[in-house]
Image (tube, rainbow, N blue to C red; front, side, top):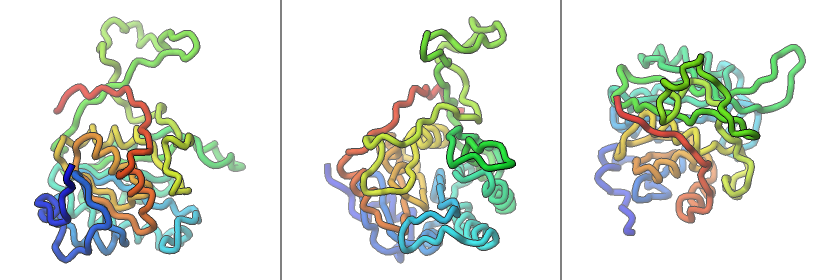
Length: 288
């Protein structure tokens, strides 16, 4: 398969010619190795269908030489507002903005997204235990995935998940208030609490070139299916290990990616296909 050049038509319609050359171009996407606050101003207004952002959580982790993950609260929030403002600008009317972070930060950042004129739709709780118990507090067991849109969503696809069964006896866990016979045969509507996202621990699901945490493809599967149609463009300003880009390519979505640190893991993942996707039984029922 012949890969498009950086001058491919869709890319030219999305980002200014003043942008640096991408470090990777595939059939569906282009990756820039740079600070997102340098690249985002070059992305054309209202050219992106969905933004998915998974920024550093300001937990004093080591990502590389170019990321300071130990900022003061004020500086961290202001830094987020800077790139979120650009992300809101580049969204098309009806486009979706997903922000993945700790609840501590998303409380503050959600308020900032509202100030930018975006409309709140959901606080999605992704049930994954992390860290250790902290004295005097409940055990933290979920990450927050905020879902905002730029006005009425232009795409919202109904997703159904399989009816839960016991892993031991295979019997159904719930009786659904005695109305089981009225349930849709394809499953239940996706809720805003995701308890079925597997951690990325096995080496077949993660790149050996990246030691930092990596996202499950199941999260991105749902983000992409929920908010886009084939051919739409997804922007991820914090490319990380390339999960967003791998999912977009598997689902015929275009993508625009930025990563400030080393991009070896992303290149390896997209060019070799060596990292597997988590199994996903979701059924995309319809458009609405």
